[in-house]
Amino acid sequence: MDYSALLCAKLTTFGELIAVDTDLAAPVPSCGDWTFYDLVDHLGRGNLWVVTAVTELRGDAEHEPAPQDLAALREWYESTADAMVAALAADEEQQAWTFTRTMPRTVGFWRRRRAHETLMHLWDGQNALGKADPFDPDLAVDGIDEVFELFAPRMIHRGLAVEPEVALRVRATDTGNSWSYGPGEPVAEFAGTASDLLLALWARKSGADAGYAWDGDRAAGERVLAGPLVP
Image 1 (tube, rainbow, N blue to C red):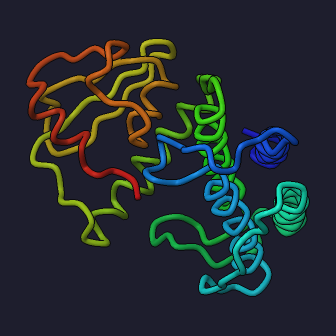
Image 2: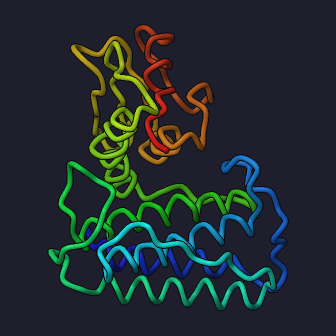
């Protein structure tokens, strides 16, 4: 998967949401009490944080909040995106600071991570301002891989979640992919399109929505899904 091209495309699409008629005070329901301004500020400062992680090999950078003026905000956001893309143009095997204990600490890690970060926040922004597009199935499958490879174990390591007592199978109805999370044979199955599954794992949609199908011990499966699996 060409994460660099994907990242550039999603960064550009997100920037297009910051238009002359954008309401910066619009609520972003999928992100708690955030407004659209908060979403832009979060993504842009995250871009700059990654620049420091790659160029200075540290993860303690702090940056000033984004400007409140709409035109200045878009210019600022685009500058953060450009800076991150430039930093991530380095060789994918180049060393970088990362927060992971289990994956290579490289530029390549950040290309993938920021592609998925931008993808999810693009959905947040589209959902807040109108209608969000579903994710490409193959990209959603990769995002689900990332949840179970990186974030679910990290949440346990950080003491923010506990080891699941039973296993849950997560199955993508449109791609045929499946994942088992937890010990032993799965006691329940949670099924939906890859896009909808990724949204559920990131708590953007409820597992109780009509678009999902459950089989087996649903109550136990819902406890596993509740995790939390991601930050």
